[in-house]
Amino acid sequence: MGNLNLAADSNPDICVWSRLKQEAAAYATKELALSSLLHATILDQENLGSALVNHLAEKLATPDLSTLKLRKVLAEAIEADPTIVEYAAKDLLAVKERDPACTSFLQAFLYFKGFMAIQTFRLSHALYNSGRDLFAFHLQNRASEQFGVDINPAARIGHGIMLDHATGFVMGETAVIGHDCSILHGVTLGGTGNLDEDRHPKVGNKVLIGANAAVLGNIKIGDGAKIAAGSVVLKAVPANCTVAGVPAKPVGGPCCGNPASSMDQTFENQALGEAK
Image 1 (cartoon, rainbow, N blue to C red):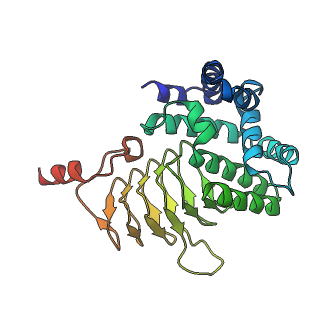
Image 2 (image 1 turned 135 degrees about the vertical axis):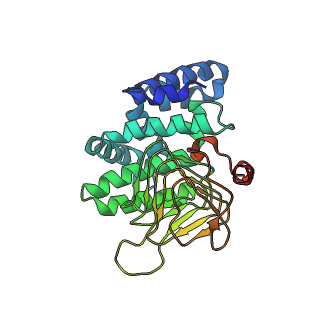
């Protein structure tokens, strides 16, 4: 696969945008019933940023906050933080590279709610940092209603994120996710108390977190770690370590350097390595 080569490009958003337009043009002639949607969402837009603003405004608008008004605010968020577009491109690259169910950039952009939820967070985070906290919380609420994902706008998330299936993902106010992580549905990055302090997990780079895992408290998850589905993590996890269980404990030997990319959620290779 050549997609990750695009990620190394100095302008990944331009490369991804070019691919999106090519795919949209092909489907506009193949699926005539979707032609108007594809033109409005992709082909009639100037760049990836404007396409993102238009698409999310359509998804998140309400009778009390029109699509037109929402487009204006989302565009202001990108103006406040231009890295939103670059990060969105890297997120799309991550989804296309890691998810075998993803057939195109267009499919992920239009229909993958994990991708849309992360981009909504990025916009809310920019507004939050600009002092527009109430609007940021509004976007958090709409993302929860529309995508089943609840991310506090004060949290911090790196680029190259794949939030697979997404339903039920929760991320608290002081939680942090590094770059190039893969996270499945039902994951909670939560706190363990109600004091106004740094109380949420700090997830490193290239971490894989399985479905329905809960990571609780101000603990560090090291780079390249793997957390098994259904685990409850209450203590720090070293880099390149796999943990599983309730409460989670190390299992097998060291995992590969980038489990988020391989998406391998088994322990077989690690157990064999430890036996040798």
